[in-house]
Amino acid sequence: MKIEPSGTALPLKGALKTKAAAAYLGGLSLLTVHRLVKRGLLKPNRATRHLLFPVAELERFLRDG
Image (cartoon, rainbow, N blue to C red):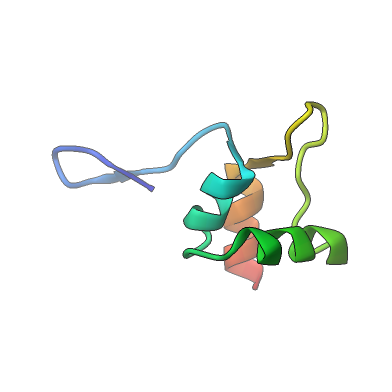
């Protein structure tokens, strides 16, 4: 969530690279994020050279656990 100066939380849009996604998920290690991808629990967008995790996918993972 992005915090605005007014104190309201706005949802992030777009996608995050692996390191940012790990931090977004509560400070997971990069190895843990890669293991979650390998197990099929996280689904990154592989359209680019880097793994990109849509914020909606990260929210789904946090919600569904």
